[in-house]
Image (cartoon, rainbow, N blue to C red; front, top):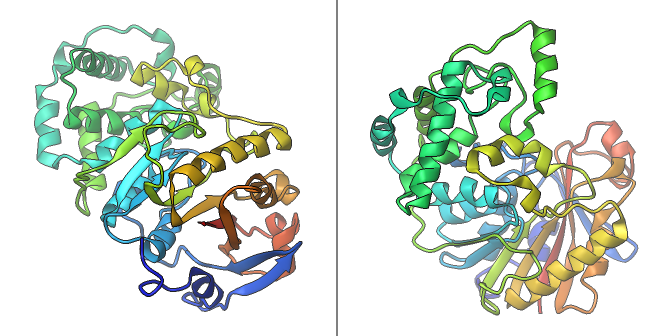
Length: 398
């Protein structure tokens, strides 16, 4: 953790931020300091290609980068208890921090781990030649023919079963995990870069019945796709700016309130975005990916709360665990976005959930993609004019 003499006062740094041409506006609402500006933006240099993995409801890499750069040193542990596609972890590893992550959905680890220990493109090509694609001749799930040409589905199912067998025999290595990660990101989509006929992206996989309607409306039938070549093409893109070899990292699949594998005061910075109020149905979005990974989605208990009281209680239990694992002088960055057309300000519930915990509230950052009058940040008008904002609650561990 950077010492006081080494780092800016984060409060002062945010207040004086003007890197994209606008001064930070500061408003105090109900005793809470709000800092409103465009702190990270599409005008910035594009994020590293390793981030280009589809996952619903994830934040941009520039968000964790903003805080990692200002609040940590190389070698510090950076954590995300709801890691999703692993944005915080990948950005941490790229900046030579130690990435820790947790997500109750095992899909998250399958998406993240291979990008923390990347193979070379030549290793991927060699392994694909070793997989007996020509021998994959049967179809087990004919219902999936609404998405895939029969020859394509044979290869997808064959690859799926080959990888499962490798895992059962404990011979699954990081090259295999990489190929699996890329494959689950090429399953369905809206271009010829995916295995399927025109559909929604793999992070929003439609049902079989819905795909039938799409096919009917578009008068389309699945054409054959080259599974190996598409995996190589996506791998080449992901690795085009170099890879990562994270010497140390930790991935968990636990409840966010009980991460006993992380030691007391081990984490310097947490950057996370929790599940919001019934915004995203992770099970229905990821059913096809879970099928490929041989995960029963009914056994994955994704947190989803419809009542704000239940969500606040869930947040409180998560923050209590974060208070245990965070170093004194460390930070928690809790991004909550907007829900229900801006009628619910979740940042207030996060602040309430931290009551009686050893955290000092530094304020709430509102990152706006289009700078507007301050009054537009607080209500429905914020959405109606097309402003995309993140709301980030910033705590210091005392």
